[in-house]
Length: 512
Image 1: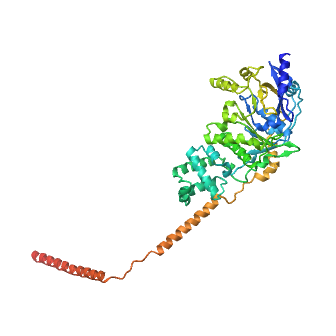
Image 2: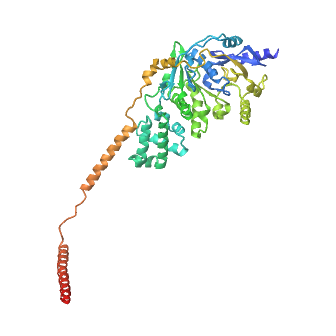
Image 3: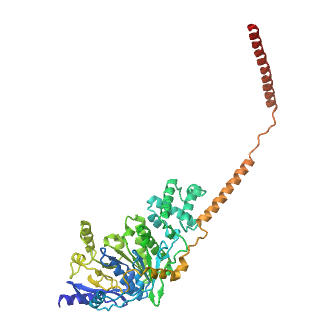
């Protein structure tokens, strides 16, 4: 048996799922595309999570696009982070051109332009329908992350959140949190929280307040509020196709900690609200985490622990998570070990750091009798990737250098007019466009403060009124003392007058 025949046999046996699957492409061997060596990703394994990695310009975004398209075809809703605002083209069928036709023919996969149902969201509300969360649902750990608080300050924030929960004070937006911090630091609640939760120092409270104000001044605090985004709205279907929800962050790209933490918060909400479903024939939702390295960079331990826990447990809720980044080394090992499906685009080794990243990446792949992994990873072209996934029994498949199929929708943004129409025609425009300001912690605490001040004023008035008045009646001893003092003063005045008159008379006679 020749090497090509052996390769095709092994790949076909390894990537031959019994149920529905995502078709990724065909195997490459010695630079030749072998169409019979088809590389498929079982749909039921999509909730075992995955990684799409590679250097800039190697085709990562198009890979997640082609996977999202086939998920939508299978009726699986998809959530995508649109970093540059250029994924809205998923709504429109792509245009046939010779390069796409040639790629399709080489893979024995005819190119058929197709559009998909999309929903456009935005954290700022400027480039899509608003996607908001309340402060209390965001939680102290994630809020501490975007405010860049240290462990002590995050601990204080956690105590504040606990107080709000115990006292049924809804924390909806920053106004609520700022009011509660002031109330518990130097307001009526300072003594109350001291015994149960511990005293909050003015310096710690001041630091948190300043960072809240700084975030407000950057114009992104509007993501906290109501109407809060409902997680069920990520599970839409249109004409049997899963809706692709796009979160456009092109206007807040300079706030990476904010949007990456917001995505994790969405995952946290999914984990809290979805029921346990076990292993399904296909996932309920697949969540693509673009620019994943931003989530982990300089993250505190408590935050990383929360990420690891969510990724580990959300699989049982029927949700798959794919991290998209430049190198596997961007992902902590505790999370990377949970990513069963790997699509690795080309890596470059121009610097010592690049070479080290390449060496570590090679170690994460099983050995192959057909490839030298390090050489393949540095020689892959655009639209090619080294792939290993879990088969339908959960066993890692053969490592295959793969020539990927092209996306069928437009690979770029729709025009501005179409984009605006998509936003305003959505049912979410009327649902989320206007913010809601209900009675929450700020109003409740203002009322409590006024009641407290009125009570203090009444108590002070009552205390002043009940203070005993000094009696004006004199005892006999006091009367005698007063009479003696008066007599002495009168007689003393007379004596002094006589002495003065005598002195003046003597002086007058002497001058004469």
